[in-house]
Image (cartoon, rainbow, N blue to C red):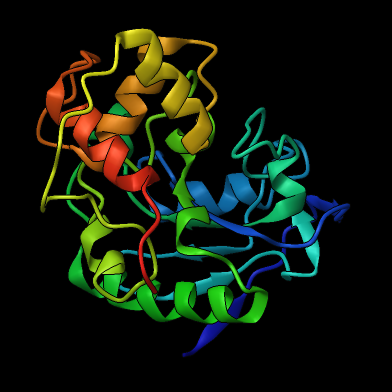
Length: 226
């Protein structure tokens, strides 16, 4: 894989080993705007890698360093997500500038990149997450059009459960407790439900806890034989 180095000055030292991969969309009108922002000292944001729509991979911060991509966020008890993660920005205008599907060339470049990072650091599938998973109150990226199943088919991310689903009939409060146990910050409960739906049931994102949501979450929480 050809990687172009475009260094960003926005990084510091990690205080945790890498245990997760966080996927973002750039949410800017074009790649040039995103690159300019991610390398601007004034912006104080960065990522480890950026993937252009044509599949070109750009490295901005080496994996040894702590890039500034996650902001205020948490996942499975980790609150310094920047220290514990590799951040990948995927060029897409996002919901603000004309959200659209991710091109095949872009996804084809993302898959081997995620695979290599996952192998290097021993990242589990459940810790390959979207920005909206780690910051449900603030973020919606990479959004409902992101092809999580393309990663899941290659065991690079968790699939959305579809088989042998069983509704546990939890109360709404019980669902929220289970959602927190799975990894989400549930401080803003409806936004946490929406983030779960965006990730695991992208065809219906309404913030309403129903039987399908309960069944999918139960399936994700159940241990599976390896």
